[in-house]
Length: 273
Image (cartoon, rainbow, N blue to C red; front, side, top):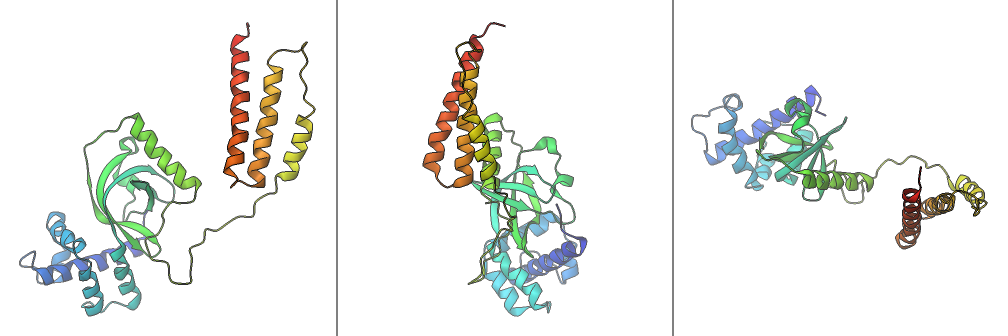
């Protein structure tokens, strides 16, 4: 959940150079006469320059145009993309193997750490954690800019569940944002897709066998609603495989599943054991 050491070093080299440029332009910190001197300053001092930087995107354009540190075109392209930053308050919702999940409103971001992953800075028992930070694009990924402020806020079950559902919805619909870099004209980001198995033949076989299920009056009362539940569930699965975008029909069949489940529950609860 973090950059390679080489990429982390590159990120900070570019960030300190950019902030040093901003300080020289706006004269925020006195007695800063070199990039090395600026890099050694405290986080509190740098915070003032950081806020000035994010308050005026034209400073990034000016840095790229002047290129005072003679960076390569690739490095300047990285800095130029930082104009697409996202600044504000985020919920750190969970840690995954590849990235930390940060949520802002209904947007879910996949975020990497720099030298340390979020899981090294935040204990899992503190999740979800409310923080203020800045997200930046970096070489096709999203990182935070090295600083974040935590809020001393605890969340109840309702908010925790809402955040969880926001993440699961984004995951299910493949809407987790993994890059802030603009899409080039004529090029679209595509999600790698695996070939899907054709489940239709197997579901058809199950449907044929399920249609033979018939409960008689001599059998336990639970048989009838249980068989109905099996048939409705297979019908729902068949429709999902045939056309998962047919929301109206899927919803109608799902109602049949729910009705069969409720009927099964009522019959089961009446049974004396």
